[in-house]
Amino acid sequence: MDNEILKALRSRRSVRAYKPEQITDEELKAVLDAGTYAPTGMNYQDPWIVAVQNPEIINQLVRMNATVMGTDGNPYYDAPTIILVFASSPEKWENGTADASLVLGNMMNAAYAIGLGSCWINRERQMFATEEGRQLMTHLGLPEGLVGVGALSLGYPAKPLPPARPRKENYYRVVK
Ligand SMILES: Cc1cc2nc3c(=O)[nH]c(=O)nc-3n(C[C@H](O)[C@H](O)[C@H](O)COP(=O)(O)O)c2cc1C
Image (cartoon, rainbow, N blue to C red; front, side, top):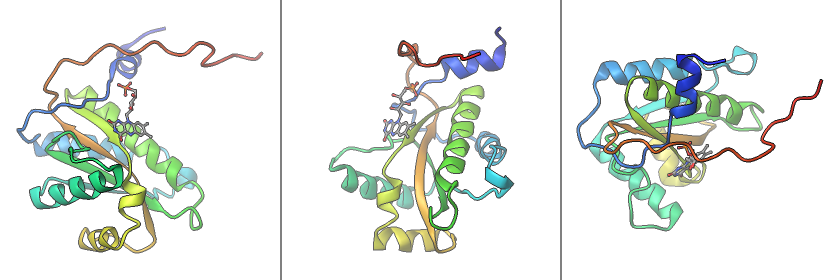
């Protein structure tokens, strides 16, 4: 079977080079809205999503992430927008990470569907477990007790997308 959605799911790729210009508010809203329609355990809609376009805060995130990574580079690949996704801590809600991961997945596929590039960027758990991270979460208007799950770099891709790498053998099996 094949259709536009299945094709898109196969051809989305992680983007690691972005044009400097900012995406439109309409594009950002389309991506964020798609995130909010991800399924969540018990339909709690537990995740918290923060899109950051403020250059000062972006620089802070770059620095914090690079510190955890142990690099001088920009772990968000100079994307003009960074979307952070948080969840309740595992003690409070066992499905927090799963819920937030689906939000990130929906947003990546939505970004691709409207011609944007995105990439899941790691290390938010460690970044937001620090004192600086907790202060930034307060500054971003988030409640206490959340953990960072992941982030997306988001923007216009600077290069054509490569084809998908081959899938591993025996990735799935069907038992009837
Ligand atoms: C949980 C998770 C963490 C990831 N962390 C990073 C990251 O920190 N930096 C990065 O460049 N890509 C990261 N990626 C992107 C993967 O490297 C990418 O999805 C994988 O290589 C497959 O490529 P594709 O997305 O183009 O199909 C992450 C992906 C996932 C799902």
